[in-house]
Length: 215
Image 1 (tube, one colour):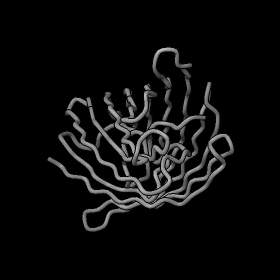
Image 2 (cartoon, one colour; image 1 turned 60 degrees about the horizontal axis):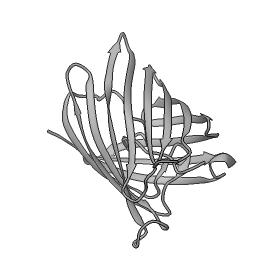
Image 3 (cartoon, rainbow, N blue to C red; image 1 turned 60 degrees about the vertical axis):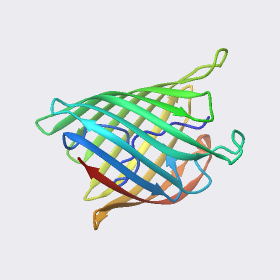
């Protein structure tokens, strides 16, 4: 399986897909991770810096842009590239049940390969479910791949447990256990990730820190 995409980082609770914004308005975020993992896949050989900007309207429509530094040892002189994600959608909550539907595109400064996803998110009480349908695309003649991703997350007072699994042209699953908290205006998190052999047969502990600015 190839390097996967990343979407918006909500670092206080680990890396999660873009969903309904908690508050309407414009916000920005900056942060860093000791090692950038997403959906059980290691994206870097070391730390990554990241940041983004989001806008959520009162009617539930949201849009955003997010970027992160990545290793690219075979594609640039300094061994680095930037991933930038563009996303948008609609979300709402009815009687304690939340849902959202949106699009996410993942692009890279030193690669012709990009990813496009339809993201569905559902939440009730302490449980949330992500269902994603994606396409890995490239230049003319590239062998396009279609994939699915499903993840179930349980959360309690900052602690969370996620099980995620790929399907269709991709294979693999992983488990992530983490905890996020806020201190002096900073959001911090720690996570243990364990992936099966299809995702690299790896495990790690990551640390993250971020700051959100509301406008």
